Length: 428
Image (tube, rainbow, N blue to C red; front, top):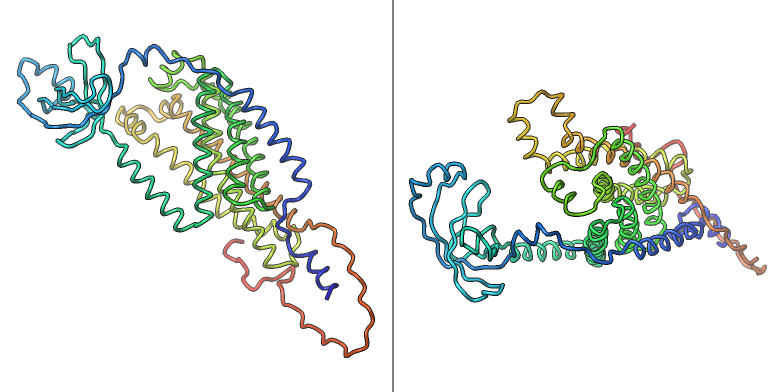
């Protein structure tokens, strides 16, 4: 009996975190905390251009009165693409004139909000407006709808994942907190964007992975695989950005950001690539580590080499779909830009070499290569640690007692080294 348990402990994977991993985890956690302390923003000054733009206030539409557009302003209306003219009566819900009613023009032009009585809206308050109209309606107030969607999302995650779903929501909240309270203010404060991204990503990984998946060997393998893959992604992205001479200033928004704040825009581009790849690499590493762990438990006789080979089969299928997802995500975010470029009827070579399109290509390539690196790294770590077991204690020798000899137990059938009851022929 004792001999069987000793043999069994050599082949069944142990879910405990290996002690050797602590020699990496503890220094990594200490360096992450130290980095957050040193890079923590001391105070971000508001940009003058943003102050001059005006103050946003909330409002509630009481009525909308449409009228015919004045023929004297026909040329101006054509330039603004204004098809509807008239007034909107709004009750102010915030600001220094809270509770009062004001009359504003119906918004016009591309992307202008279409409002009706009863809508909650956002107005911009400019007391020194040249036109004399201090309030302008700029957008709908979507806070109620977004809260409803967030609550529905949280309920669905908890209903499906139960305690794990609740932990994943807490993990998501921590991720948002790190990004909004540390990373963004630290970049605005003038710190190196790539250094901030590395420290912030390490904090997200250390907290979110263990909180969401538990303190075990599989999560530790996924963490190490993610860390190694992010290092590869950063090196590839930096080489690609330097090779293509991208400066990170792509449009009006990035231009205004560069003018108003002391930010290294090329470094910000690298940081964006790193943070964007983190979520997808996280998914791949956790899946690979869990897959190898389950295969190792299902067949105790498989060697690390066989586990690695089996895990790589799954990884190839996973990578094929995830790479497509990553490229489509970048393409979807840039779809209006792609349509605008196509409408300009420029030569393909000019389109592909323009800084905006080249930036998206670099994002996709660097992220994809980081994903590809994540599969073999994580699979090898998982296969190696799955067969690394602590030294078992020597069993106590049983006392000799007269009695009938125990019947031999039938051998449990397991897959051998060369065959499987379910050979994955479609993956070979």
